[in-house]
Amino acid sequence: MGQALTGSDGPSAEELQQAEAALGCSLPLALREVYELLGARPDLTGNQDPLLPASELFVHDEFGGVLVFRSENQGCAFWGVRLSDLDQDDPPVFVQSRHGWEPFLDRVSLACVELVLSETLFGDDGRLYNACELPSDLLDTVPRRFQRVALPDYPMWVGLKDSRWFSAPGKLLRQDGIGVHSWLHARGRTRADLESICDVVPGRWVLGYTESAEVDALPF
Image (cartoon, rainbow, N blue to C red; front, side, top):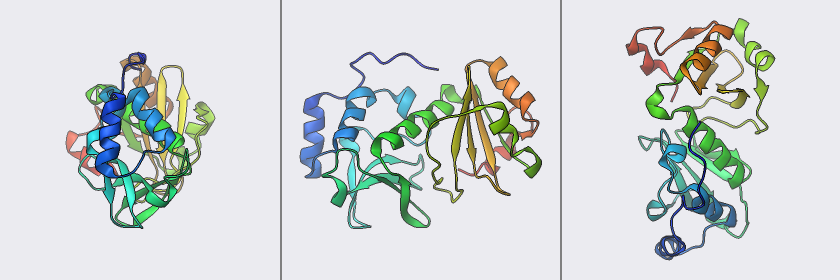
């Protein structure tokens, strides 16, 4: 749903070295590779809860010290790697929100796949995005009609558990929560793709289907 990577979509080796010098620590191998691959592609990393530019990486003092590489767009949550895990090539990632630091995904590489999926979901100024709260009678519609993406379940920083991804040609979906409070976020490659998702899942879609004031009800 975006331009292909070119091989020159990240900061230079010198910029990364300067960032590490300022931090006083080295980036884990997997995180360094992510920056080298797409650290300068805001269309893939900077639409909602962005990957921080290398020069803005910082250490959070709580939880024994955490190297933060991603921030919620209003600073309500952070994602990072514990300083004690920096000797690992692909260490676990934790998310900090209202409940403190908690496990997010068990590898940086997985967390960055999730980052790109989420940032793609909200890309193009949201023109091809929509969301709805799923009533209990629609909870099984998504796994029946769309293919599960091979990414483990993980928590949303707002408190919802068991976020998971689904896809179909030209379509990307994220379901947050599988119980009473469950939200579905959808993105289409085209307007027709998006509308077909809304037709398959006949929920109360927020954007373009109800009053814009209800956007504030979205749980993020």
